[in-house]
Image (cartoon, rainbow, N blue to C red; front, side, top):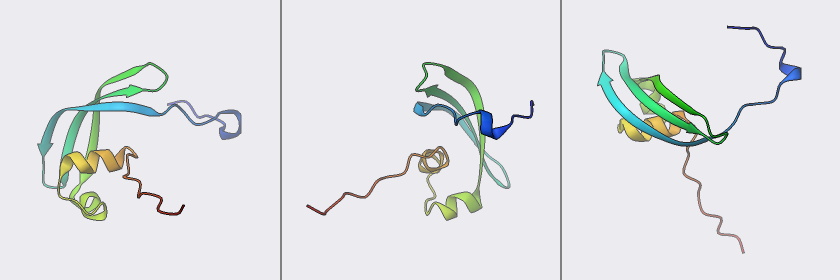
Length: 83
């Protein structure tokens, strides 16, 4: 991997959608195979994401699909109740 000078680059593009292709469980947690659609129009295929049981506990869920959403930054936003 190339070393990048952080001050010359901005952060990348947003994730538009993702699809879970396959999940498998191991002694540490889950390995999830994903396809990710980026806001830039590109698609990432066969992305492997490892989520530990500790990660799921931190996300306060046992559902691997919810864990993937949280790991990718898709958090439920609480409604703004102020007028």
